[in-house]
Length: 233
Length: 233
Image (cartoon, helix red, strand yellow):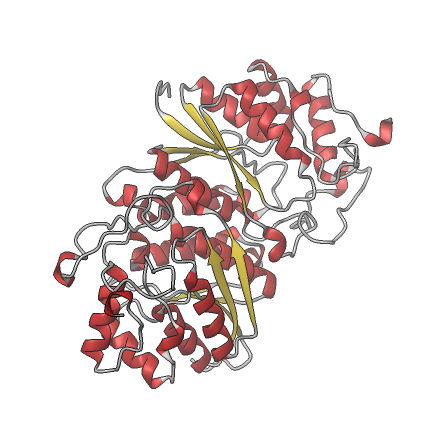
């Protein structure tokens, strides 16, 4: 799917997944319009990571949009609920985690759709993953399919026959697969941030769900993990 | 559909349509969680109208969420594009107006869904209208149906079998019908605001699409129009 010169909106969080999704979009020939959302996340340090990734990938434009999801609450990522910590990877992935943010990917894709429509991009990339994040309803293929159907009736572009495609290149990949693919594409993972509950220094906690999946992914991929963990300092 | 004690999220803009939709939700027995969006609209005076309507209807809670859609641009309501003016109602309603805001109702419903999920409401009311706003793709029944399908795969609530219903009680009503219904429900329309391009005094311009539809609606409904128009001062 070489589409040289075509525009794609890529949701870019600063984590590994969206960095790899963006690099895959770039490799497919898209000009990248990165969209980063400041939503009141406790790990706002990931916004700096997103800016580093955007610069390293040479995106055409990065837009940072602010929406305060703390007003709704209901998640450990945006509320005063504690982020769960464990040393046991086997304990994660059962049920829907407390780090689920109500309707977050619906909101993010809606904003990406607005951005895509205004810059005349027909393609939207989101780094969702249904393997490691099987507990999140809005990381599943049926969610993405329903959103794509919606996008094509929701917009002026859709009405005049310019359709939108929602790309989820990582949806069936394990974290190790994603890290291998990013490694192949030359991503410096030291730029990225995954931890849900970083120390004031910005160091990763090493024990939240997101840190555990990241560490395990590097181990399994056989790629050195460049992350600075607070607990290992 | 008397649902005494059930919760509904109602998108409340400060205009006539959402005020009538909210009053209809209240008459059906719902406790109302009003959601008002400050999106960078040039007619931000409508936010004061929304607060007046929320108070008059006795809503359980009104949440005002800020999201700056000016960052995307592409609409006369959020950009530096002029709001079109005319004295001829027959000239409006052809094609998609420049006052269309890309993906606005998708974004608004996504936020309403997040709010509904966190307060455990299964019902969402939006005052869209496919008659007078036939040019807006995101006011059509097929858009609402696609969003309702999405809502039920997007959320934790949907996964555990608590379904969402998107109510559009005004979708087939003319502006005159809506005004008659609001009049029956005791709404004081002087609280509401419709103008897309109000004077610095807050007075309605009387010549934008929204003012024209409002004036025509009061005329056809035979209900006195309490609006203060700048051009009539």
